Length: 381
Image (cartoon, rainbow, N blue to C red; front, side, top):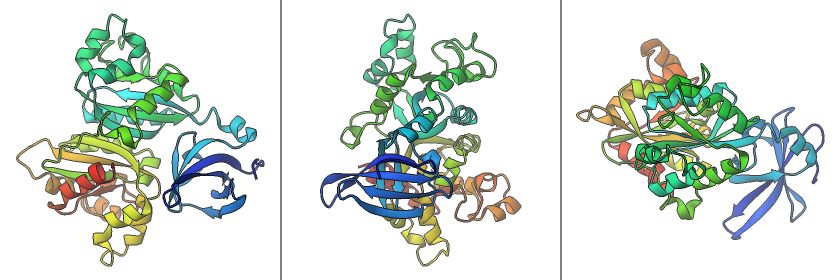
């Protein structure tokens, strides 16, 4: 069971068993012919999960360091389980780090879409406020550069987006997609040429090699014990509402479009975090719809089917009730109805079905703050 045949890929996965207080290791096999997977317990030498299709999981879901949600368990993929899989996928599954510097949400959305159009999938994303210590770490290779004092001035105490990007030759592709540091010298069509101003305000910082990428990702996305002290989430919890870009929309590359539309609709993204919601939490979050909305079961399964992006939304016009106004921008729950009656809404533009309608938003004004607290305080513990 350790190896892999030509019709399947093999990975080593780890799951923390809370009841036994230990980490269990598995071979996770993925079969591309029918998008099924199975799990084999390496200690007991027994099949743990029989071959089954899991909603939302494809070959693109697997890369070293990722977490996949398999039948109620968060499995971290830590290595390839055979040389055949390593040789086939290592270049395709490379990760890198990028950081979008302070700028309008609309432009950040365009940059996310630009990455995706060039084969780089967003696998982690978070909005955070940089301290001097953070800047010194992320720019550790440039501290002697003449521009570094200007970088400190530009970035200290400012909000940025950190991203883990996955794709074939991700480090090299990311750097090529960005262009050289000086936007005036960057190749036409590159991100810095399109949106940059000068070598300091050049839109995005990116890791220059694979080793730095791993260090930067581990730093920007710390484990739970360090989340409360390093690059914390930035929710304001004031006149706010919750927006979730659902897993199917994230997989379909619609995150950037959602960010653009939110900005153009008159709203600010004051906090953002990409996360995986476990089934039990998805059921709890949607409990108010249980027995009322026929799509309840599908809604829970969709929210738990992969990474989603949770955002705290605040109206740019401080005299407006954010939850009420944002609900108008999101539109009717059924995208087909939205396309007929309110074609300029988010669900009309990005949604597919009543379950896969791209966006969740707080339905009631009084629920906005509660839902933001659930995602940015309770689930982040």
